[in-house]
Image (tube, rainbow, N blue to C red; front, side, top):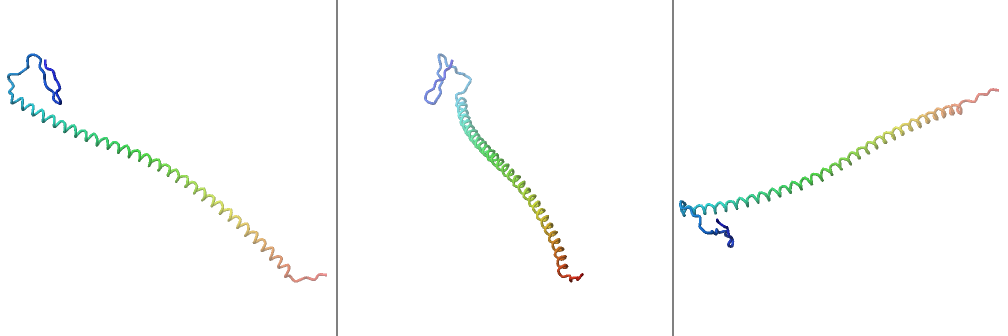
Length: 140
């Protein structure tokens, strides 16, 4: 049985009893395999760091998207408020225009009434003038 023991940062094998040695493995091949494993470990570390960078970039992008969504919601609420304000102002303007039309009709009606009264007074004035300027008739 083989145990793994840690010495500093290295992991070594401690064997109990008989060591398992394969007589068919060339020691040079074992060195090549060890070198290949080291190269693979370094490549794996680079891949991990690349993945971490991508993950960080993805997280930052997610935060940016969340911030943009929040800004979008705020702007949407502001736009909704402005639209509501616009609708209220439009209704107030329509009410003022209707009120102005009513006032103009009232003013026109008053003008017509005054013109009729003036015409009536003018006719009365003419009849009074005709009576005043009429020649007196002496009837005895």
